[in-house]
Length: 183
Image (cartoon, rainbow, N blue to C red; front, side):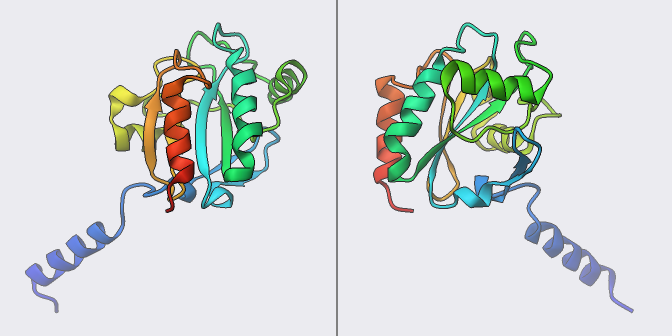
């Protein structure tokens, strides 16, 4: 029979050895806009810009700038990941096919898109829960087109509110630094 303090010590080690959530964006799996599994481990070693998107928002024209970033920096190990969401003003289609068609036809979006997801609060998708836990709730999306920059190591680097455009010096500077950094 184990002594009570040995059992308690063993339980503490088990809890400490099993973290509550992901330690890296590359440990997350979502679904694509087409409903297929999308393990983020496929982006390991790349810099990511994760953006919660919406089709009927005043910030929707940022899709154009996001695709420009994708085109300009993809060869350097970068990708944008769009995460459609209706959390803010219900400004997104309910149908994944309509979201995909809108993005491709209107803005010629070619970067990966996830399924429509919740991005705030307790029911947020795993990436967004992890980001809020890591950077703080004050860095969580307050509206559509909030951006998170993730380094080649899968760690969060920065959070940019909706008003920071894809071509803003602040975002492009941080992106350029992240691309130049070795993980």
